[in-house]
Image 1 (tube, rainbow, N blue to C red):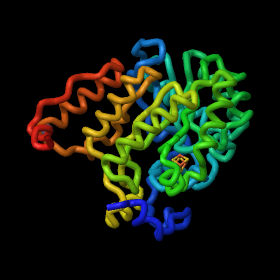
Image 2 (image 1 turned 180 degrees about the horizontal axis):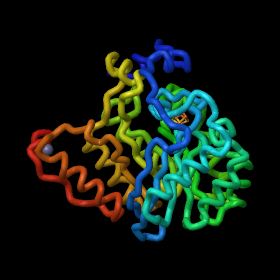
Image 3 (image 1 turned 120 degrees about the horizontal axis):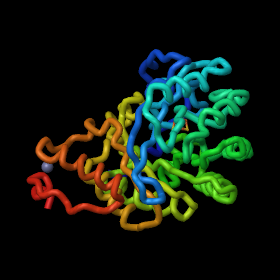
Amino acid sequence: MNYMNEVSSFQIDDHWIIAQRPAKNHVNPKRPYTYFLEKERTSNGQVEDVATLFLTNRECPFRCLMCDLWKNTTNCRVPDGAIPTQIQWALDQLPAAQHIKLYNSGNFFDGQAIPTSDIPQIAGLLTAFKTVTVENHPRLVNESCLAFQDLLEPRLHVAMGLETAHPAVLEKLNKQMTLKDFEHAALYLVKNNISIRTFILLRPPFLTESEGVKWAKRSIDFSFNAGVECCVIIPTRGGNGALEHLQEKQLFCPPRIESLMEVLEYGIQLKHGLVFADLWDIDNFSQCDKCFDEQIRKIQQMNITQECVPPLNCDCNISKK
Ligand code: SF4
Ligand SMILES: [Zn+2]
């Protein structure tokens, strides 16, 4: 099936995406909605501890087709001081770590998400870390990033979703961004000595499995060419209403775990930077009961070592040959 022809008559916009949504979860503005410690390989080759906090704040103003992050957000701006309170609370619960990620289900430099008056206090809470990673839409990359950087002891990393280098699919994702926007934002960050991490979707809607793999690889190439230091491959998952609707119309299907492995191998062997596979909710991608756990272990190993591992010898692989 040519998915892109199928979709040409299908109107996807903010209104339609919002109409497909199930209800939000209840969240507490005084607490991050989740937080944990994880081990991650850093660009200097060491494996170090990262405190990852998912801050509770106002929903992102963009309405990307595949996004489910709005589920754990508020409708209104959280009170001044709530974000530093959340960070301090999570740091009190977690063991010490070398790095911190402050993910806010949107854009760190959106004043309606993280009140600007809280920024100095936030910077003050981060002095013990080597790096801090925040997420932001490429079109919201501006001098606010530099002002935050000036207040920080740790090195600033900005995570931006490229999603896909496929121009027509990117437009359909309703991210309100072009590839040029991404390149401009990346250039600005690189020039100002800010590291970039990017999120790449494996098999977004409207692509077949093989197209999904091909475009995830091209998206890695595009990202490294733009100056990105770290690519995170995210298997596109349902759960936000819109993708379920597209799945019913055969315009979306989650990728296979083998495809995730293939794209991860491709990115690692380039040796242009770090490449990780995102394993969040990975149980939903199970296709073979016999080898699924082993596949996950291999992907975890590749994430940590940044070395490829030999393919699995399972009946499911043999039957595909
Ligand atoms: S910019 Fe990010 S957080 Fe906002 S809707 Fe898109 S994917 Fe979700
Ligand atoms: Zn198998």
